[in-house]
Each structure stands twice: as C-alpha cells, then as structure tokens.
Amino acid sequence: MPTYEYICTKCGYEFEEFQSISAEPISICPKCNGRVERKISAGAGLVFKGSGFYITDYKNKENKSGSKQPSNKKSDS
Image (tube, rainbow, N blue to C red; front, top):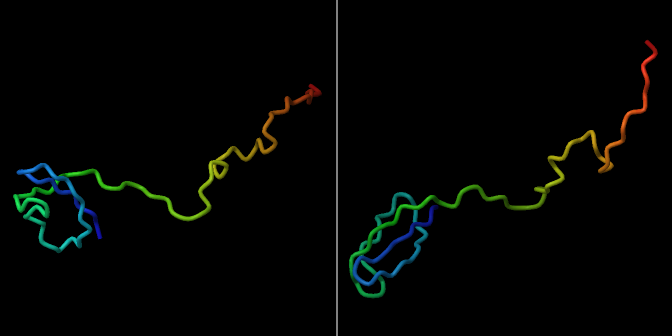
C-alpha cells in the first residue's frame, strides 16, 4: 500500500496518509476542516532491506589482494 502526501489549501498543513490504491482520496484537512489536495511525489524509490548488500560484492575479482602486482614474465621469441 502506498503512502500519499496531502496539503491543505486553507492552512497549508502537510501530512502523509498510508492508504490502499482503491481508497478514496482524503478531501478534508484534519486540523482546520479545509479542502486538501493530494501532492504528486516521486515515491520511495528503490529500498534495500536486509543483509547482503555490501560494496565489496561488486569488486573486481582479479584483484582480491588490493594491490596490483606487475607481471615479470618475458616472452621467449
């Protein structure tokens, strides 16, 4: 269920309401009984919950020791 943001056109009070998508929008301000409008927002975005999201998960697998060793191999040609 999404969280909707509202603003009162009379007193300017801003509040959030956790509602189902099929619920009717709130039309009356809980503070002054004025008219409210639902704000358009970007939403919550991407949220990672739980363990397992570490910066080291995407490190280069070739360089595990942290320092790059120069190659001392010579070709025999």
